[in-house]
Each structure stands twice: as structure tokens, then as C-alpha cells.
Image (tube, rainbow, N blue to C red; front, side, top):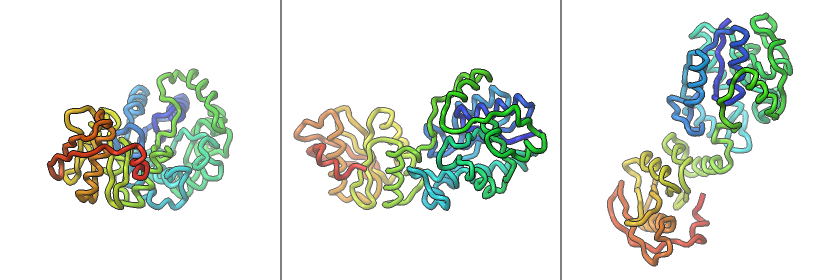
Length: 328
């Protein structure tokens, strides 16, 4: 039999792949990229996941689901988690994509690394069935890590896979997965984490704030993961780098209509001002930029402004108290 295996790159999906290979199932990996996934290029996905698939000799299809996730973040039919994460609707999108790929490559079912009860929003027992039904794949999802803890899928009932050779994991513990990894020879895997930035409280707060003031776009979402953020007007945002790598990232994401600010002749951040900036707001942006430079204790600092316009501003750095009301 042939199956589509959803490989995120985390330990659970790696174990699911290995368990199915052990049963002789021919696999085709479907891997998703997104601007909301930590440290990834949406077009190419996670290098770790792709490396693992290559080591296992499994062909891979990478799909960017950013556009669909942006729509779901704005309006999630099945609600959001504790952050801005529309986990249920996102899983429906993923399984719909998997269903389409099944038809394309001639696969008969889908394999995931889900463990019942592990994630409170999208992996509760009843929700697994709701998600399958909404995605049009009822009974076609095999979950090797928790198969014996839930109702059997069609591939199990039909004998396409051996239910007794799968696991009965449940809940949020990780010890059984770690032990299984040792048995299967899976040694190089990332530390457990959500993977999706929308579950991170600080990032989720920035997404919520951006949606409220400006709406969501891919370039703006990419900026949310960098620097300190300040709201200087209803449609005016300042991003201040915290380290050299963030400064480089901010410069790379700058658009022709942005301002870039940097204190002259001293070490400090690169700041990006995006949106509607009057002279007064730009002056405030320069003062905040000076505050985070090595010249923050100086009575005056020269800040170079480039991008939309080129100029020099001599400013007095703001105090810590001044930044509180603007910080996102």
C-alpha cells in the first residue's frame, strides 16, 4: 500500500514514518512551510525534516500554506487556541492538501504523528473525527503512535496495516516516544516545541495588534519575529533590532516606502519605520532608536534616516518610562 505521511520534522511525525516503513508501507512525505513556522523558508520548509526524509529514502512534496493560514488567523471558523492559533482549521487545510496529493500520486491513506490528548485544541478524541470529516478523509487517517488508543481507521479494518504493530500512546508525556525513538534508531530530532509561532504569547500579541491596526500581510508577519515593536500611530509602526542578526533581517525586509534609522558613529540598532510617519513621528522614532544605541546616556545623538527619504536628525534619547506607552 502507499500512503501520504505528514512530516513536520518533530519527533512524533518521524516516529510515525518509521513505524509505517517497518510495516512495508510505501510512503510519500507531505511537508508544509509557512511564515508562521519558526526558522523556516515557507517555500522550502524545514531543512531538518527534509534531511530526515532523504535519509529514509522517501520522496517529498513541500507546500507553502501561508496564504490559507493568513485567512484563518483573520477568521477561524472553529476558533483559536490560547494564542492566535487556528489549529483545528489549519489541520483541516493540511488534510485537504494531503487528500489532493493522495489522488495525484496514487496513495490510499494518510499517516500523521498525532497522539490523542497531546494537544488540547486539535488532538482531542472527538475532534480528530470532526477534522477528518471536514477535510473529506473520514477513516483514512492512520495515527501509528496512538492507533490502539482510538477507534480503528479503515486501513486498519481492511488489513492494509497491522494495528497490533502500532502504539497506544495518549496524553502529553514524552517518555514513551523517546524510548521508541531509541528502538527505531531515531537519534537526531529537535527538542519538543509547538513549532508554530502563533502559539507563542508574545508573537500572538503582536499578530493580534497588527490585525487590529493594519491587517495581515506576509511581509508584515515576517517582521513580527524580529526586534522590539512600537506603535507610534494608528498606522505607524517602528521595529528596533536587538542584535546584529536582527538588524540584517530588518534591512532585508525593508520596502522602498519604509524609513531606516541608525545612530551615527556608535553601535546600536537598525530601526524600521513603516506606515504613516509625519515629521513628528519620525523624530520620535529617531529618539527611540537613540535610546537603544550605545549613546543612550548622551544629551544628544545624531540619527541617520534613509529609505523613503534621506536626512539627519539630532535628537535626545527617550527614557525607559517614555517607551512604555508605545511598546507592543
